[in-house]
Length: 343
Image (tube, rainbow, N blue to C red):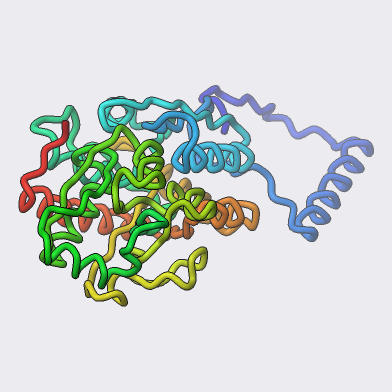
């Protein structure tokens, strides 16, 4: 991008020297050759000439952090400038999210968002930003289904077994969550509502301790995002009985969906995307969306997603805005019906 300085051009027309003609011819030939082999130079688009910060409102590690770093590295190559991940965990993602809401809308700050982005407005009595008004959706990057898992020694081997046991003795089954208002808590609250059953929540401070206790038999069942549960499934310590998605997961092709298992219409995914501060110029948003969609088509990126059990999405900014609105309405209803408050 050119600096806003006056570029002076001599008004007199000077005869071109032979060396200059040769150099111009060589440069033209080189440009044609590079185009022929598909060379791609950094994108020259309206974008700030400074490092771009990608705020991840989670600690380092986990798929959201991986997504931020993976996308940042690729965009850095495309734009020819640094895209730096800044981990800002805390307050149920609201510390990092609030920081981005207050950042200059110049393309210099982006935010990785997930499930809590659409649930927090209904879980907390007051938050320092407006989810709908303070952000410009960029792209839905991917989704990973919630998976219903039980202890490997449990007598519950299917959703039918779970429903039968829960209906015989309401409240007797203990299920784990990452805390009140967490994604796996809300996923189970929706499941209870749709299946017309009642179970008892046992909250933990995160997925890892919850899944560890599930593997040890301290709790009976839990919903969790596939990337979190997969290592426990692979060791045989927990057993998957249903996928909370519209279709089966290629990672667990023999595990039925919750709809197939008897609770029709149930669908909850852990999703991941990017937003920018509201007011970011449209040409920057268009350019970012275009290049992010290209990144999702790269084979090495697809490989990383597949290893984590995440399906790449992509698509338009408008489609992502509609998706976020749908998630906001869904979790508003679930939170209000179940009377859930974050703690």
